Amino acid sequence: MIKMRILAIDPSGNFKEGRGTSGIALIEDGKILNLNEIRAKDFKCAEEYWNFHLNLIHDIKHDYLVIEGYRLYNHAGNKASNQTNSILETPQLIGVLRHYCYIHMKPLTIQYASDMKNRWSEKILVAKGYLEQKGNRYYWNGKPTNQHQRDALKHALHFERYGKKER
Image 1 (cartoon, rainbow, N blue to C red):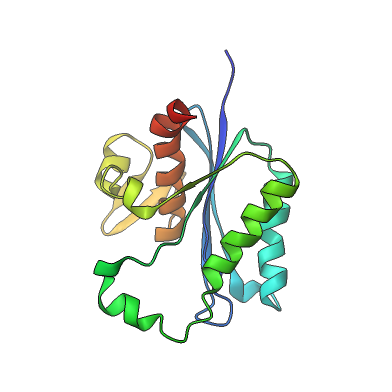
Image 2 (image 1 turned 180 degrees about the vertical axis):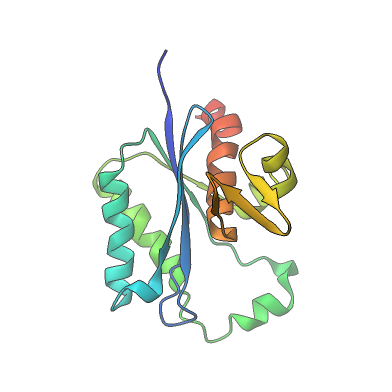
């Protein structure tokens, strides 16, 4: 039986604007191998933070790479106006990741939050046994998770279930 590894990233390029956190999920045939994060505050500059993402893509063995794309929805209302004068670091990071994959001929799938958020709620992740809920917190392997990690997991699971069929 051929095992299929999916690496999913919920990228936050924000270094100057809020010290972002990218979520990382690695699954193999529906089993979570790793849930992690990359925190901008752990790096000296945006480029060092972004380069860590590239090293991760290079170093972690995977068959598919899935990242969450960035889209400014017109129904975002206040969120859209909050982007006024933003240097839009997350789309810059996504561009870096896309370019890296292009140069190194690595297949890349970009999914948007709207593609998977309705299908993969935290309740579903708990019901399917991916996560455990204690109070208002969600845990994987006894460790608390954050929204970025869970979003990366949702992207990996969504791609595994629906995305591979479209390729």
